[in-house]
Length: 239
Length: 239
DNA sequence: CGGAACTTTGAGTCACTTCAATCGGTGTGG
DNA sequence: CCACACCGATTGAAGTGACTCAAAGTTCCG
Image (cartoon, rainbow over all chains, first blue to last red):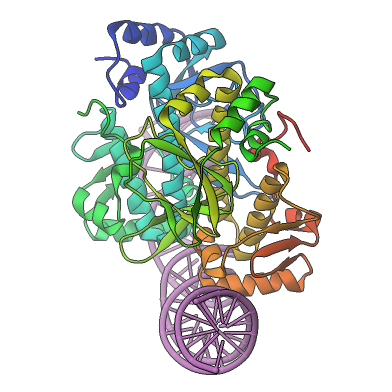
């Protein structure tokens, strides 16, 4: 099986053996990050790009006082800061939700990635999908109530993880506390708890400590008006 | 004065005279769009990139029933669909809020843009700023109350428009109805009205039919915790 | 001048919030 | 191996920001 970065980039389109070998060569020294640690902090400016190989992280911003908004979840195959050579500083932080394995890709190697047209296009695609996902999050926060937001989030995570082979019969790892979900969905922790109970009572999901099982995918998609188009997965190699 | 596209791209970094002349050459046949018309529809797949030269538009998504979420505002100098050669179809629509002047840039010319390193980098920057702006919108919808959301939106629009020379003493054109603001901020139209009155009563803004005047920039930024870092404007030529 | 679109106002309701306490699981040190 | 400590999940109750419905007032435009 190809490495996780290759798997992700091939969602956009097939890569040559040479490109695949090149991507394999990028993943050599793995750095572990403990759950709860920050992988990159707002304001930071590093000289390398960080790839998540295993585990889950989140991008978040802290407001003056204490409130925190998670703006996206980062899963294996995602680059934390592909823009590092364009922008001067991170405008948000990235924190590990579970123990994560990461890889640092040095500046020179990143430039080599962009010199390979198929890889460069896949990276463009990846950035555009991230942007489209943020648009969908704005819709989620702006138009849906608490239960629908949760349902939509579960649908999104399931679809994303499924595309890279990290689900099994509707089940996927989701090491996210209710407080984290609250920070992602813009609602209070207490309310997340109640919305979750309601989804469980309807037999739609089973949410355990660090994993989620979607019991009725179709119903969950319907109730949250989930339309996977924004993930733009149809262009490349599908499962 | 340079054309609007050049002015925007030079926010990232200076361009050569040759690049500037090239960008000038792109703006030849202007297409007008009336207020209320769609410039691009969800699902569409065009063969050219559309640039806004004058007027204001918005990106939005419609949910099943009738609810609508505006996910960003498009101002002069912005490209509607820079990703047209990567993604198969638009995942959102773009509607004109006022009468707009637009320019179509043919596929070949777009490819030429990307062959010019300084322009290509500026386009990359522009995409990344759009993404960062979406993150900030998620924060806005997730963490701030109605009044703060409005204040933050005004600060953002002022800063963006100021960077391309479209403000004057805190005043800028904003042809957006209260119903539109509601669709952008995820609150009801009635509530926008009341929040607006509150901001006016505090002497922070003066909101007219099609324009906004910020009376106390500092106070508005403070109350909405507006931090312009996410717009990444400090890298290039500032006013 | 008339109508359409937008803004403003009032009143009643509800989704979600905050505060606060309890329960449960998990890891750690004695 | 047990007991404590901690973190996260759950529950209850009271408060409120924002919603809906509905009507009236205003501005714009043909």
